[in-house]
Image 1 (cartoon, helix red, strand yellow):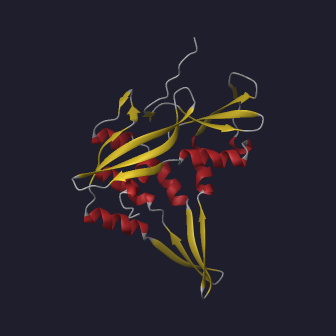
Image 2: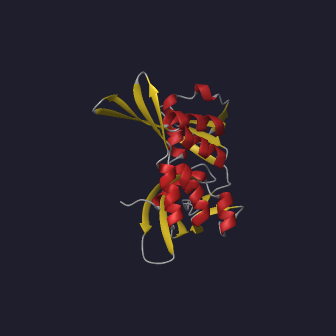
Length: 237
């Protein structure tokens, strides 16, 4: 009888995490450690977002998240395993991050920051629910698409002010005679606001049990998921 494999229903936040990348000759599986809140803040702070006044009536927009993503990947990589085409099992290999193809390293950074908001239940009431979709690995190393949910208290005026202030944080400077406006990633503000407003969540586990209780959620939740979920609260689309 063929074995039936049940797809996981919860993201295990504290379980070993893997990122799988398919290449021409093999599948590469990278074991990473848990990304800390400090590292997520450094990632968002490292995103380059600028406008450059190249002429009196011409402004160019510059945006790059790959450099920040490469640094994040470099910081959290632990072990590499390879399964050549035609083989059934993975074998560990010596890991030298500098030797990993750039395409794979950037691909891993995209997987780490893969969460996107699916919908928001924007109805009259005390609470609002945001649903996310993200790629995450199961304990056996296979990658799955998870749908999770975060329930918040309705944001108040002070939270809107805090988010808008963070989103509107602009540094103005000069470079080669051109005016440069540097923008701060709004996710830095939304990560902090998440901790203020979160009530409960679903689709996550930690310490072998479903993640419950505000204190545990604030402590255990992935920083990227915090940032994306709370940012959706302030979307007017």
